[in-house]
Length: 438
Image (cartoon, rainbow, N blue to C red; front, side, top):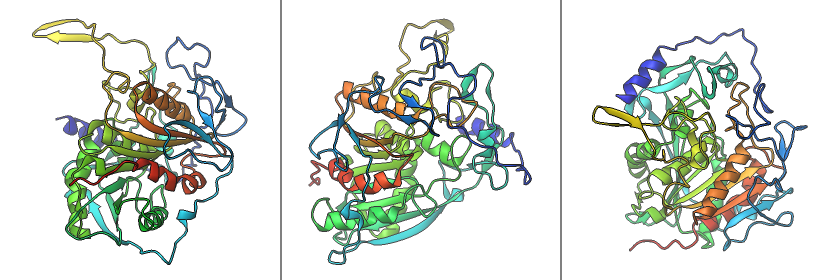
């Protein structure tokens, strides 16, 4: 029923692209009309510790709103046996593991294509009509609901189809018929955020030298486009277990058949990884399904308010993993039979502080010039990527999670230089303590 309602809403909002429209610019500074003065008022935008002379602003890691962190010497990385918060940079040299070594065995990569026509969970898809040649044009001009800047209205989105590529790396050391540990990541394929060949080279080198167990890597292309009103946004930014369930039911069986591998059912041998919105999806996969995944790695995870369509149960989207929705207090009612009364129970948000700790090991990173309020109309207090990731670190620490959080100086959103510097050590930390199940 919920899917049918959403599809009807999407199909009613068909808007054809305007081939002659100039590309509307995105935002990267304080949105017009934002509340930057009163933290107790709705939708407060925190500008403390920001250098607004750069676009996006440069963040100061000493911002008192951030949890304490250990500043490392330039070019140093966090020790593999430590947890907590660390500051690296400003220099980011690629790790030696990113260079192909001819003296080590190389894994094989097999690819296949998936279509919405064959999906049950994500059929139909979502398409947003942006102006011709203008990426994200429709959201850069979209309005928000009256009195609620957290609810972006995107009438240019409607039902449609998608295709995507899935790439499967199989290490040379894999023994046919054995259960393989694996890492599954979003934004894979040739159009993804991430140049996955670097990961495959790192795996060749680290598996070949015994620093990682022989593991399969599965790069899943995004459903298409970006952010609110897109298939990519629908899959990655929705705060639920749906994406993990789609991977489990529709992707992994195809991986096993096409690549001739058997994937372990042991959640300790299953990792997720992502970049930007696929980074928040990687965490949601483990959060909602810790029986499937226990290890998560993310660069610039979008722990902000990107969920679309707007969900009144979680109006702050992924922001509500770590902090409550900052809008005006709404009546919280409870029904019992035919009677409706005022509720005194917690809504359960924010999710991490109000839930028992889960067996999740999480490595993640943010840049000092990460994204900041790129949609002008969304002055909602929930679109500072760096602040969101810093708040994630704070609540994870409070709940006793095993995590390592890296603040990278001289780094933008999903910063390629930071990835090349840190990914090998991040993988080593992520898989620390793994022992294959009997």
